[in-house]
Length: 413
Image 1 (cartoon, rainbow, N blue to C red):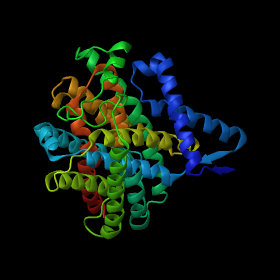
Image 2 (cartoon, rainbow, N blue to C red):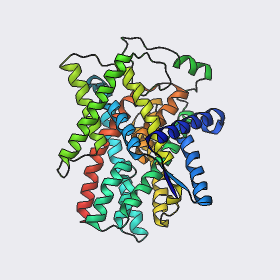
Image 3 (cartoon, helix red, strand yellow):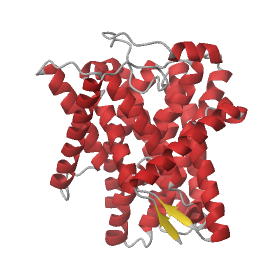
Image 4 (tube, helix red, strand yellow):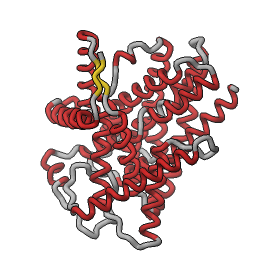
C-alpha cells in the first residue's frame, strides 16, 4: 500500500530528515570525520527505515515531486543570480581547465559504461544509461533521455533503469566526495581541521553590508547573515522571474536544436537577470538573501530526494547494471584523485574541487555543493572551488553532456 504525502507533509518530513542528519553528524564521529553531508546522512537513514517498513508490512510513501522540483529550481536560480560576470572572470583559467577536465571525464564515463555493457553481453546503450546520461546528468537528464531511448532506440525499461542509476549516483556521489577530499588533504598536508570553537567563531561573524569582494555563494551555509523583509521579498521576486522564464523557454524550445532541461533555463535566467539589473539598471543585488534561500533550497532538495528513495527498486537492478555502476564509482574516485586533483594544482582548492567533481560526476550539482560545504566547514574556505563548481556543474556540464550523448547515439544509429 502506498501513502502519498502532499506538499505540507513532504516539507515537514524533509525538515525532520535534515534535523536527523545534523544530529547524526554531530554525534557520530565517523560521519563527521569523513565529511558526510547532513542531508545524505539523514536521508539514508530515512531510506533504510522505508525499506524495512516496505519489506515487513508492505507500506511505502511517495512524496511531493512538485515541491522537490521547485526547491531544485530555486537552488539553480540562486546559482544564476549569484553569477555576475566579474565573478566569472575571476574563475579565469581555472574554470576553463576544470571544464576540460570534466568534459574528458564524461567521455571516460561513457567509454567505461559502453565497454562493460558490451563485455557483459547486453545492449551497449544500457552502458550509456549507466554512464553520463544518469550519473553526470542526474534524474532530470535520465527522464528526458530514458523516454528517447525507449521510443527511438528500443531499450525496454530505459526510464526505470535510468532513474535507478541516477538514484545510485546521487547516494554514492554524496558518500565518496568527502572522504576522498579528506584523504587528499591529509596525505599532502594541505590544511588542518578547524576546532569546534574556530568553526563557531567563523560562522558567528556578520558580513559587512558593503563587503562583496570576498562573498562566494554557498561557501558558509552556517554563517549568520543580515536580511531585511524588503530584501527577502525582492529576492523572492527574482526567483519567481527565473522560474517563469525557465517554464516559458522549456516549452518554447521543446523539439528544437536548443532544447535544454528546465533547470538549465532557470540558471540561465538567473545569469541574465542578475547581469542586466546590475549592468543596465545599476541595481544593487543583495547576495546574502540569495545565498540564504539557495542554501535552504539545497538542503531541502537533497533531503526530499533521498527521502523519496525506494531502495527495494535498486535491489531489482540487473546484475550487469550493478557491475557497471560499481565500476563507474571506482572510475570516478580514481579520476578525481589522479586527474582532477593533479590538473587543478594539487593544493587545498584542488582537493575541494575533487570533492565537488565526485558530487556532480556521480550525482548532481546540489550534491557537489554539499560535499564542498562539508569539507570547507571543517578545513576552511575555498573561494576558487565555490566559484567554479556551481556554474560548471549546473550549466556548462549539461551542454557538454548533451553534445557527447547525441554524438554517441548518432554513431549507434
